[in-house]
Image (cartoon, rainbow, N blue to C red; front, side):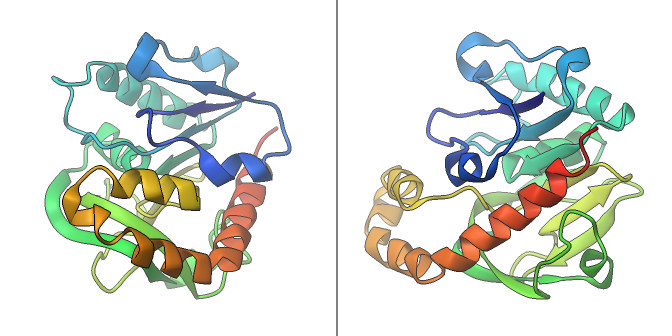
Length: 223
């Protein structure tokens, strides 16, 4: 079964659920502290969150989650990490996650690398596509990882480790309501709500197409 880890009550799977055609189970370790057993996982998606990948002291479940990620990667179980989930993948594999570097906010284009154009997860996407960005932290690449995509402000937008683990910096799951909820976190973003929503809605068809293509590609890896 596909298992999805939601790390934050305000960072749900959103539009991803519209494109899932297989059984799935959602976990909330920030409430229960519980994670799925690796033997029950045929694929794992880890979502974003307002915390950082190194905030183990504030969010102890992150320690167990990073260990689960290492186990899943070692077992070659398909893994997809989104924003914090991508940063957790990098951290679990020994790379740094750095705060206040390459920050981005809003609807921004991402460009595929040469390797990204041939990558299984990204097959069918145009060389440049629209993404929604909301991050202060960014990941370095783990040893052996392949850089798949970059943006003008953030060099590391997507990477693959091995043949079954991917980390993304951007958010293919966002909806208008999610953006409105995130904007409400801080007065500095609350005043930008309508502009951010309008830019997102202007690219909504592209967002849905990108999310569906990536999920279809990811699900195709399942046994």
